[in-house]
Image 1 (tube, rainbow, N blue to C red):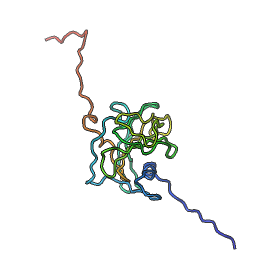
Image 2: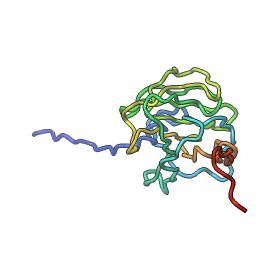
Image 3: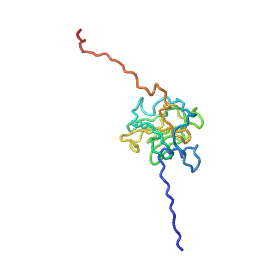
Image 4: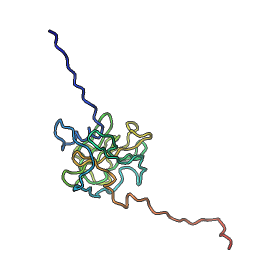
Length: 196
């Protein structure tokens, strides 16, 4: 009698879910649920800087999935050319620095962010820090890689998780960082004043 070979097909995880599986908070071999944050777990506004630049263009915003494998966008995409320094938005400890699905990734567990603690993720990033390193808000954790972005132009995908739950990373930033600076009037030189 001939033995039959059985192959089990395992669906590919979205990149964000793969990051959650890498989290020490996720149980071994489990696939975490994704979805909007519970109302009783607000996100503290502990961010002190943008991950890239001073006020980068948001190419695509956060779109929470309706279910664990549902469609959505589990973070925000920020315009940034290759080689741009990527900074930790808040103080924390690097929980992962390496490659996920071929993309350079850095994940930082944020200090004083509740239980379970919040984690930010940045990709595609060439890490300049190692797992376990303590980073302050604004510290460079890597640089934008020239390839691996899912945007039409080079960008950084910035994610935020509490345990297995995806949250809007922009909620970390205080209003003064989210607002555009006020317009400033500058003197006009060499133009005659209007006639009365």
